[in-house]
Picture 1 (tube, rainbow, N blue to C red):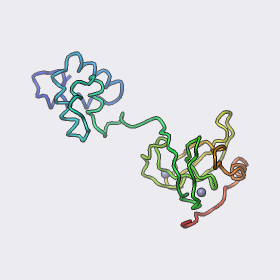
Picture 2 (spheres, rainbow, N blue to C red; picture 1 turned 90 degrees about the horizontal axis):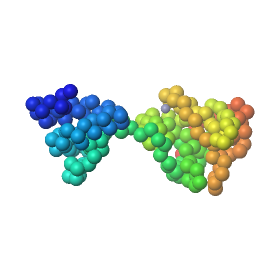
Picture 3 (cartoon, helix red, strand yellow; picture 1 turned 90 degrees about the vertical axis):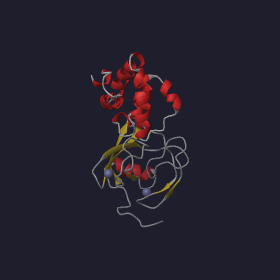
Picture 4 (cartoon, rainbow, N blue to C red; picture 1 turned 180 degrees about the vertical axis):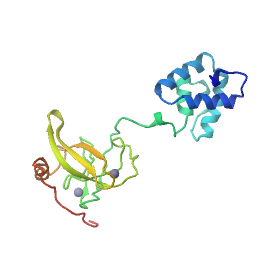
Length: 197
Ligand SMILES: [Zn+2]
Ligand SMILES: [Zn+2]
C-alpha cells in the first residue's frame, strides 16, 4: 500500500491514504494505522486537508488518527454526507398557497398546515442539500400506529418520493379537513399555486 511506502514522497502517500479513506470503516482503519505507524504523515495530512479547504487548527496534528483522516479528506468525501435528520423548525411563506406559516413548536414544521404542500429542498430531512426546489405534492395519506397520519409526497419537478408525519399538535396543526381529504384519497385544495400572498 502506497501510504506505507516510506521511500515515496509524503504528498503521494497522503493522497493515496485519503483516496482509500472512502467510508467510516476505512477512516477508522487508516486512522489506527496513522496512530500506530504513520506519525510522519500527520503534517502532510494537515497540509492536504487545508489545501482542500478544510479549516484545520494546528492542534489537529495531535488529534486521533481517525479524526485527522476523516477531516482531512475534505467536503467532497461521500462519508461526510449526513444521514441523520436535522431538526429544523422555521416559519415560512408557503410556496404553493402563499399562507404565512408559523414554526411548529413541539414538532418540527416541514410542510404547510393549510394545503399540506412542502418544497423539495432536503435530501435528508433538514439538510437543505437538494437543489431541486420543486413542490412536494401530497399524493396519499396513511394512518400508521404511533406515527399517526403519514403524508406521502411526490415532487412535481423530479418525481422524488418522500414521507412526512402530519403535524397534529402545537399552535398551528395541520388542517384536519385537508388530512381527511388526503386519507380518503381525494386531492387537497388548492389545485393551483396562488401567486404571492
Ligand atoms: Zn400551503
Ligand atoms: Zn424534486
